Amino acid sequence: MYIGMDIVVADVGEKRLPKKLTALVENEGVDILQITPLRMQGIIAYDEELKGFHKLKTIMLGGEALPINILKYLQSNTNARIFNLYGPAEATIWATVADLTDAQVVHIGKEIPEYHVYILDKENKIITNGESGQIAIGLPALSDGYMNQPDKTKEKFIYLSENGEYVYLTGDLGMKSGTGDFFFLGRMDRQVKIRGNRIELEEVENALRSISGVRQVYVGKEDTEYGGKLIAFCIAEKDATREMLEEHLKKSVPDYMIPEEFLFVDDFPTNTNGKVSGAELMELYRSGQSSEEAKLNMEYTNEIERYIIEGIWENMEKKTSELITPETKLIDLSINSILYVNIVVAMEEKYGVEFDEEHLITSELDSIGALAAYIIKLMNEKEESE
Image 1: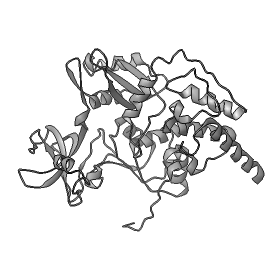
Image 2: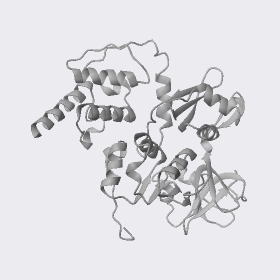
Image 3: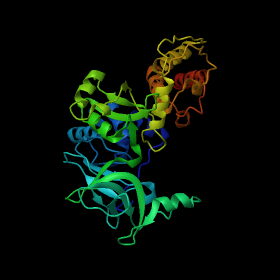
Image 4: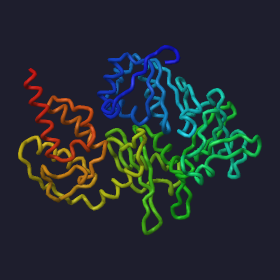
């Protein structure tokens, strides 16, 4: 608005469905797109040639770490300038920006004017370039703290001893290079310990992302009787295998940093901000144990219900032998937002209908029967209008 441009805001359906978001960008003549890397990954999976993005002049990515493979893909398949943005909500979102249009490595760039970014040691002292530490942010738009949470405010907002500046401690690990560019190295609270070895989960993720064919990765720790193990969730090309990933990892990380299990998935569940929900992924892993012997057991009253049940069961992380009927609630089948959207897309393509925005969440259509009835309603409305 500041320079006279219009703002186009994607609705719930457009944010969740790559097809609809691509159509929005094309139909509205969008010049500048701000998006999370995970949602961009969904766009790439939907339209590998990124035909709908050819007219984009600028792509701004932020909200989570930008994988190098997504950067390279955008560099090769668009003519847009590519920016990587960094900053937490406590600092009114963006605090640094990096122009990565021609870059070979991912970094978060330099401070936006009037913002101050520091790297601090364990005693919250400013440290020199090239050393890693916690990222701290000071700026005119910095929050005063957390509402009704004085202890948390005192912990996260401090005054620096060197210059007295009021800053926010992000909990992010970073480094400042000799060129003045900042690098995001991961979350400080994502360090785990397995069999006496300290492991930065982002380091394992970065090693996996560097492998050709791996699009996106999340690595988590599962506690076990023997001290825990690493679980890697991967969105990768179809020919990717556990053996291939292990072989590549052996060249770059110690053996204790190689995940014990690799799970290949089509998409990642996200939170309301579009970021990967690690907790939900780990819960899906736990619920999927001991489910390999399950057999589909269902009852249905029409072919649409049968199609829905079979589609859900095939994509369930945890297969169940319990009877699935039109009255079965989606929540009882552990249907997350990603799986629900996949179901919606499949239904739209098979039956030639389009879900209303309010029906893109499971709370509106909470059972197999309700979902089937809505599709029948859409089909009837379509037939009457033709």
